[in-house]
Amino acid sequence: EAGVVQSPRYKIIEKKQPVAFWCNPISGHNTLYWYLQNLGQGPELLIRYENEEAVDDSQLPKDRFSAERLKGVDSTLKIQPAELGDSAVYLCASSLGQGANTGELFFGEGSRLTVL
Amino acid sequence: AQSVAQPEDQVNVAEGNPLTVKCTYSVSGNPYLFWYVQYPNRGLQFLLKYITGDNLVKGSYGFEAEFNKSQTSFHLKKPSALVSDSALYFCAVRDPNAGNMLTFGGGTRLMVKP
Image (cartoon, rainbow over all chains, first blue to last red; front, side, top):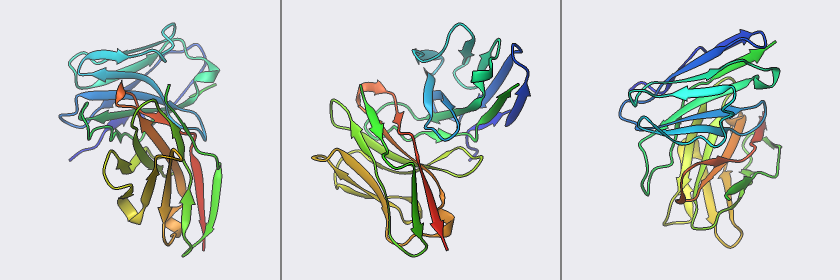
């Protein structure tokens, strides 16, 4: 079974340019997450989707960041315009949803963004 | 609000020796606790979880963790470390009464030397 797929793996852009990341979760996983991971730190949640609905986006900087999951499967995360401080790894994860035994997230390999 | 603390930035251990990576948590209710491992330039991989039941849980690659409610801890352990265990380890907590949000600690780098 394929895992969570993210692209691109690496992206280098100049500041003020736009950038987009794509995520394909594990088939059947209705919950999708975007996390931000700075170097040497733990992941921080940006946004969580239950199917196509964004149920937790309180940590998403909405002035420059946007995300969508139109059909409840794939998702894109966009930054426009990018700033130097956005350099980080953007992790996508998916899970089967809520319930007593959930909480196990499956992560993609991440998209490493460098803003020059 | 839920939180996780990993007090050690790095743990060094010799191959063959036992290892412990520490984690303490804070939640309002009964916690769901997790350990993840991250190898260089890779995503996080699930190791083990505690939901309920036995306080000692066993996971992948010979790792185990002990839930201690009185000390609000969930330390990761392995009886005999391997060089290949060298990686970044993250503890995470979810408060089932606060939605499906998983909060991660800052991570501990484990270095196993031959």
